[in-house]
Length: 105
Image (cartoon, rainbow, N blue to C red; front, side, top):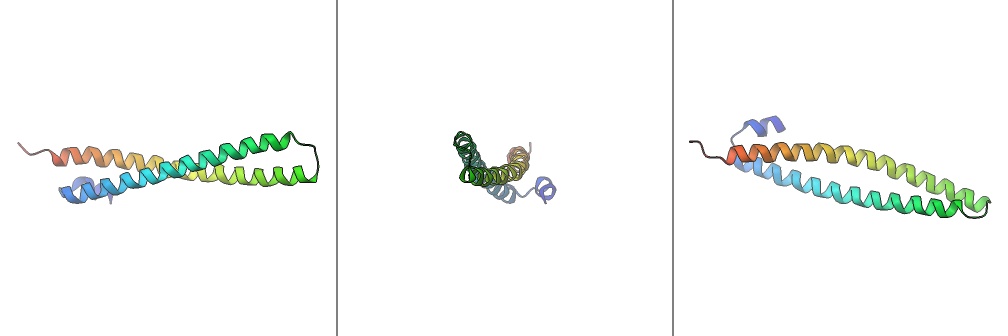
């Protein structure tokens, strides 16, 4: 689909696709920021928990936090992959927009 857009001379379609991709990049960046913040909070909380007296409560909290951290790291990896691809797509579209917008001499 991207190749079709890049090779077509339809300026409107290319600009629409660029706008949509830009929006996706923005949403993914916000999601990544949220995940990074949550991950940082969980890791800080894990450090605090490890400083507590050893017991069943501490073990249970460590397990919960470990699961949460693992889940956030998995999400981070997935979102990072999508963000990388979306940014690459956006760059390609923006470059194509520049060429499509140039008048033929």
